Length: 137
Picture 1: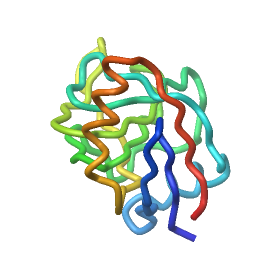
Picture 2 (picture 1 turned 180 degrees about the horizontal axis):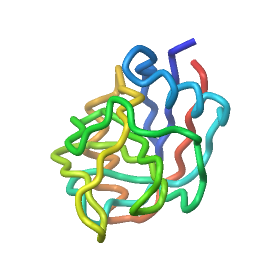
Picture 3 (picture 1 turned 180 degrees about the vertical axis):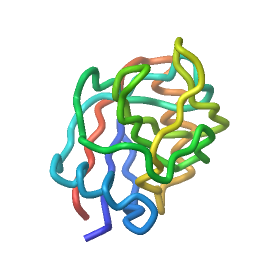
Picture 4 (picture 1 turned 30 degrees about the vertical axis):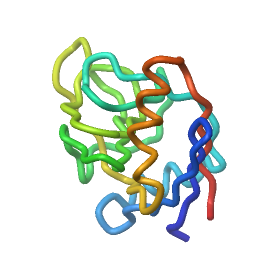
């Protein structure tokens, strides 16, 4: 099943896995559903929120990777020169860390609730970490 529901702060988004473009990443993340964490505002990448995951290893390499996710795209950085992380773009993003430019696997796309991306980003920036839950729809 490729449909997801993502709840971030007070907002709910419908989403889909990008199973054709990132099959290994989607399969690896699916094993962790429901996935609950918190998002914080990015430090270097621009208009995005992220989930720092430290040394968590999803066992995937690069596929369908980008340094410029569009608003509503979710990317997984599988680790390497920086820690493993998940990033949700809500505006302009140039994915980076203190080590420099990164590329993450675009594996989820939001399909509804896009009008709440900017409010989520601003809330996270000004009010701090927000709970996030990824679950099957």
